[in-house]
Image (tube, rainbow, N blue to C red; front, side, top):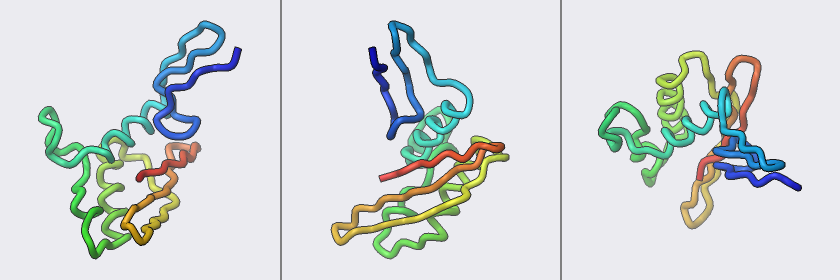
Length: 118
């Protein structure tokens, strides 16, 4: 039997992996990456239990966006979660309909995790 994945994006990280009637929950670095995606999807001040968590979405959603400012905003949220993590690769693509896709890689120790944000 092949596994069923409840993935956040792509093939990893997983909330759950069900394979051969066994359930494995996310842990370790994959859990960190999943939490990071949640933080980057939250507007700063939106979550009442931690008003500092999240990003200032107006930095990203502005008409005259600045790639450096966007990267700095994402990196500031990353450093609050893990001061040892770093953004190693970063690219921003915006199409004519103003749909943005951010692709980046986060370095945690010796591991490099690709993350896509839309």
